[in-house]
Length: 639
Ligand SMILES: Nc1nc2c(ncn2[C@@H]2O[C@H](COP(=O)(O)OP(=O)(O)OP(=O)(O)O)[C@@H](O)[C@H]2O)c(=O)[nH]1
Ligand SMILES: [Mg+2]
Image 1 (cartoon, helix red, strand yellow):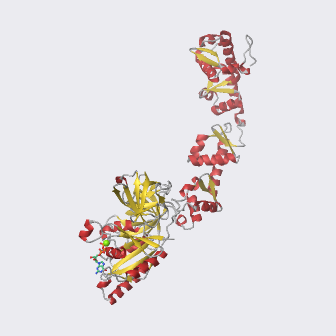
Image 2 (cartoon, rainbow, N blue to C red):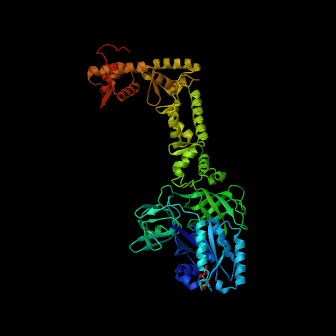
Image 3 (cartoon, protein in one colour):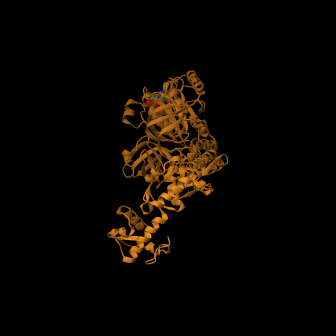
């Protein structure tokens, strides 16, 4: 199968990068008038390069001038193979060092080195420069091929350089086609007939003509009208190559360098990242709220640093920090980024994204080592553990935890064997799930002992106790399905709980029953009951009497003795039967009640369906035909 890689130039200004790219590819990548006039590269240039059987490359040519390092970083982000260019006549210079550091920080794995302008140097001098370069690169983690002396003018060494690039390509990272599609945009333009075109290097995944994509920030929806790779129409965009997408529905002004085109909904912008930072030797330490410029993909944004410890020192050890970004960007677990000082603009280090969606509290990052690890199962476990009882959404495993979609089912299955349980669409640590369960059971037991007469904890109070609605629902359904908890109307209780009057209130309860019986059709409000019977929880006892069946509550807090209320209702029904319909004043006299006490009873009867209101009068309602309300003419009812 044919392999595609992106080769990125690097090196000091004027060292011959663009001339070398032209000698290799035939393409002059300095397209701008200003570039021609000043004789330097300002922005990125692109050219295809055929490296022989089975290997195709796209070359990204970057500017070497120190004023345009920002553009260099945008070009370097998608690079698989570095092409470091050092002019024989000048040797290693500041941007030779800075560009090499940037390639390191972006985790470029392999590269070739061209000692160019060889035609200008004596062989001994060439040898000296080559040795110096080799020694310096020995400390770099990148796999560098031995330097090749070349001349863009004579063409000397170009074949050997092609061979070195082929070798380096073998060491380069493979970009996964079966992963989520992502293309960081480095150019946007409009083209007659094609509409808005965005270009960039496809980092991972594929997207086909006709497919819907999302452009961040936005998010904006668009459809892929066509795909081009170096001027050739393709059916789909694939990783490791320069890609131009013509997008239907995207306004030219809505995208820019730094935008990202994706197709999966799990990509979301974020303004906080937990990262592992490494600072270059000689960089100033980063302290609380130091300002830096973060370059991730083709985006660059200002950010404040919140180190996990006191400060971040330069050195080999990476250190945890949270970055608060001034604008949201798209980031994924494992992404590499470059950090530059805001002013003067110098490269100070880099970072690796460990959590693109960290919990807002605590405001500093917790330990990141477990979540940064390469083993996917351990990593999932660490993310799940960090989420506590909330757990981690399975949908977060791709972008947040860095798994490819095809890995997800297998990793979830393996994680299940190591203390992670799946609850619906979330993963929770077994221990955290058990803890949450125990907390609910404890809380219910405590509630029952505090309120032995109540049927259970109101559902709303339970939700507030848990805090998160999704978690509350999951816990409740787990506990009810295992039979430990019963949900009964608006309350939840332990399955063994039976509401009962505790011994110390039995006397009080008897007194309330008597009180309500004596109050008859007048009823008593909670306030009246509490006022007359101090020292007992009158409201809770009254509610208990309702559930036990000896009392009836009307409205929010007026209680009646059931037998008394029903007997009053029967009297009303008898009157209605006799007369066909009655007005309140007609029944008031026969019942001997004041209007104040009669009206609530009539309204209650309306609500029960015993009576129907017609103007000011009442007629028989449908419920009055039920056997227990059947009222025999002229005879007293059996209540
Ligand atoms: N003699 C000789 N001159 C060269 C060679 N390669 C490049 N040059 C000259 O060096 C100058 C700079 O070359 P560029 O290719 O523009 O350098 P660059 O590295 O692309 O410069 P920036 O992009 O601005 O960093 C030009 O005048 C080239 O003609 C070479 O192999 N031999
Ligand atoms: Mg150039």
